[in-house]
Amino acid sequence: MAQGYDAGFFARGGVCLPDPVRDALGNVAGKSLLHLQCATGEETLSWAVLGAQVTAVDISELQIGIARRTAADAGVEVEFVTADVGELPSVLNGRTFHVVYTATGVLTWIPDLWRWARIVASLVTTEGRFVLFEEHPVASCLWGGEDGIEVADYYFARGRPLPGIGWSHFPGGDDAREEKVEFHWPLGDVVTALVDSGLRIVRLEEFPAAPEWRFGPQRARVAQLPGLFLLVASR
Image (cartoon, rainbow, N blue to C red):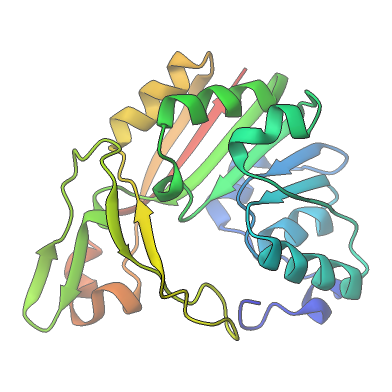
């Protein structure tokens, strides 16, 4: 559970969503909303607090379990589903949603961007919207330290597997020290894959961001580059 966002926070009507996302979506009360790769569900519960009819999906049974307990303790109604995004058209029996949302640290786990985009598009109802708020691929290539800024990954890797070692994904969790494989997708590929899926891009914005854990003393320099982006697409 992210620090400060316990069940009591949501029971009191607390919301922890990025301002650009809230500004882009406006009032979601009464709308069906699908949250992809929801992790421990802090943003999921925020959407429900705002009045959306929320379904949330993650591949991790452990993280879904944490999210379910928080929702129950907060008295917030959410439908949680343990599934891979690639299974959703069948798992959800062809359901579609007014809003499909996913955010921060999601594309790095997608091995086939074009297949992912087709699945996303199939989940958006007519005149619905897809909202992606994600780390900018420029920033995800960089690391900072005492000696400066390192270009750690190739920007144009385009789905080439990038092996590494896991980490703890939430406070109280064990370090996931097993090998992991991530993927890097240029921003142009993200846009093109979504357009090829039949969605129409209606907004694309970039924002500065440089988290302390990643860039340390180089934060100010990295913050001169795009660190996050918001993409909104419609059917």
